Length: 238
Image (cartoon, rainbow, N blue to C red; front, side, top):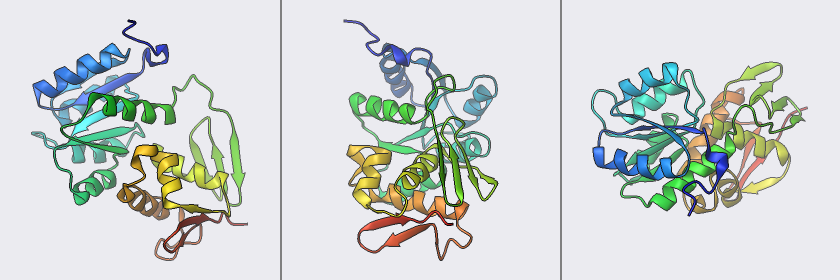
């Protein structure tokens, strides 16, 4: 059997950050067998040093680590990079997930995890942030918003808005469905995949983050309007 059945994985770079040798060995074997270019760091400080000279397409990081944990690493990365981040942790409580998402993570996997599930999460996140040389094609102009799908740039009333990959995807989905009421389940499935339809904390956190970046008054939103008990409706402005 071909160890790399999907040649599109060739040269996609993944940084694994974890202080447990057993976890890093398993991830190195699983990810390398799929054709990914892999590097490993044992803590957040080492990871930051690596990304100075090597730009990963995706980062998988544990939460609990010495020197700098995964939450602080995510916050530091978000000040200068929009690379997708998947956080690993033995903690499954909703508040821990929310803290990780608030820190800038795009996805969350609880230990112990199945390799098939993790690889599926990796593929899903990489699909949403294709390599720079692969054209994604298109420009969405809706009301006050201009979304350049090739450059991953959002302009709101001639002002560029810096968004994480998941925030960008969420806003893009809204812009493609301006004026329509979109259910919570539909949004979760569209942005995080079918397996995330029962994880509303993802949506709650990211809607809040997006509102802070685009709404004149996040406490009284005019672009992303809540439809009680149903979902949200996007109003793009004039």
